Image (cartoon, rainbow, N blue to C red; front, side):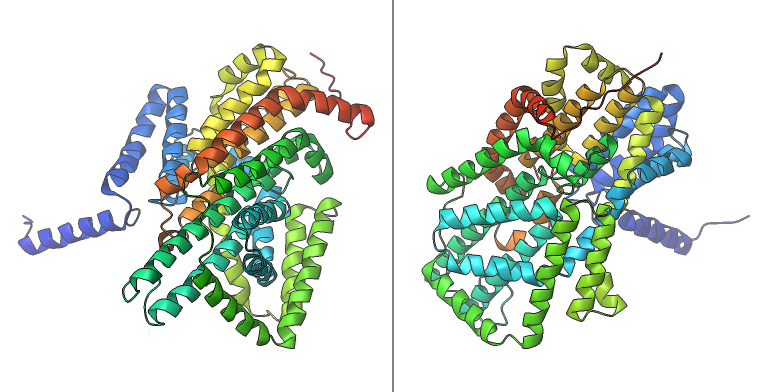
Length: 527
């Protein structure tokens, strides 16, 4: 007869404790228990009602996105997706088909983000010169917002924001070391005089506002082009639009929204609304300027040539995208090859670092697509789509905009766009929707997922990236502060986007078609 000794009990308990600790890392214990509960309950719910289990999976996945700050959604969301395939909510073949359908987006994330990594020196240099040469805080804020917007229209928003974060972190470190000593950690204020502490707090406020303007700028520019945001490429690829056509179709919304965003930037700075308006302290400016001049004098000819080569590669990137010379991801791959060749990078380890920012989100996108496959397989959105399509055509646009906007603000805009564009594409293929209205709804989805999603860090990947970056705790940028600072932009962008989607988009699209700028595609259905 076997007996359990205290030693065995102790070992068994230690194993259980280790498993409990390792599961989802340092995520909250209550969150771990909820995920386990989901994994246990889902098979039983599926046996009772596949439709209810599908909606439960969608809600559970949205929860993992909302908890992204505590645990990266790839882990809990991936567990839920694996279980969904295992119990028959979808099949591996359907998941593969969804991934294949969105291959261009995956290539964009894999290669374009990595490609921009190799021209970051040029971008850092540009932002540094602007910050030191423009003394007006309002003008500086507008420039950062506009520049982030322009770059995000052609590059990846995460990469653009990563460059600005790098610049701000470097400036923060320079000043902190100057006043506190080289051995003091940047998050430690010990050894700083009362006067310097006031300057440091003001400097933090200055950097916070620039970071928020830049983050909003990536959203303003992201809506303009097919490569501005990952969901844009999903929508554009499904609709069959190339770079120029996508830009023209969204312009009735993107242009007014951009103007409204810049006006908001000016007003919040001028009237110092919700933490904006703090200028750069004079003492901080002098320290930063001295350091910049010192580094500028130390530039070697090799570095200067490297910057020129990076500028030429950036020019090729813009030309290649504008004329649709190849798939977006392929253009990104050429950027990697050209930039590394011209800047002296030739080792696998150095090249590998460029992919660390993009591959986690690429993996998460595949999990998104698994949930989309579940939605398609179970027909979860069919009743909703049929109801929306049954209302008057003019009312469909604002309904889609609002629905996408609300969901994008609390979950993730790429996931929401993937779900809705696949649903209206199914309606188009089954002849429940004509091509003209499909184009309108696709733009409404694009606008709804890009604009109201600035309300919370959950909705925009760039916002979440900023919140989880190393600069956030240094400048005291918390979730709550980011939410409050985004309120003026959220209200203005959402309202302007809503009005333009409902009234301006149909009128301007007709004008573009009459001018011959857009081709009117007629769909003929035989039933």
